[in-house]
Length: 274
Ligand code: BTN
Image (cartoon, rainbow, N blue to C red; front, side):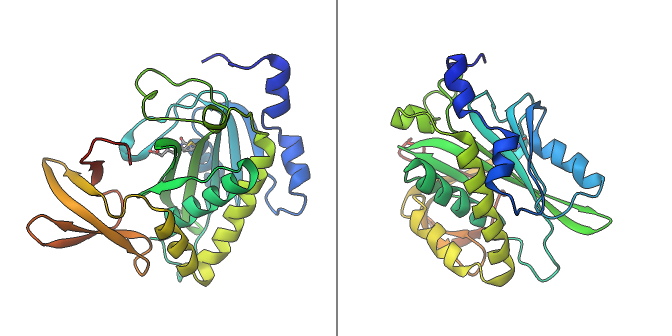
């Protein structure tokens, strides 16, 4: 999609590698910014294969083959912030909390830089005004050095329009507030918050998981739990902070289950995108 901004306005708000590095002078892994990539997760996987270290970060101003959860594509027009960060968890680090920690980190950065109070849709979407603002995709790999997590995040920041299909369900900070955002400042804050979340993963994720639970609007909602061939009605009871942000649900027959991550898709029963 062509840039919806005037050239001058776009220059003032678009992410710049030079300025981003200036805002993060002490970061061990200086972030890379590309004009366009197939997918920042794919690029980070290539860097990982050539030995990239913990914290390596890749941004793109647009993606031609952005990847979403469950093999879906993630539409990535100019105006969004698309990034992937490499985490190399140690053997003692828990893996389940990773997407929840990332959601809290991005939520904090959006509040601090853009003044927007997002809500979390279990498991990995941030919503603003009931529409999707951000999606998170954590891909797990192993290489010669051990486990790698490719933490991919797409935020609709200055996006002015979405394709017809997404329009009813997606929003951007610009569309919600009417204000264009300095993408470089937001990118720097997201990286700072993610770096802090990475430390928390090794130390004590519980306070972050409690913050995740507070911001999660799925809790208390009636949902349909979709698996390959089945659809079952349930009530979302709460977030399990022991199990890294798993969702406890109660089916209508009274049985309960803990949903850990992508094994099922949830749909709100009242039709809203919750
Ligand atoms: C989802 O909502 O299903 C997750 C979307 C994750 C999209 C981000 S954009 C940056 C990174 N690169 C990708 O190809 N995907 C993630």
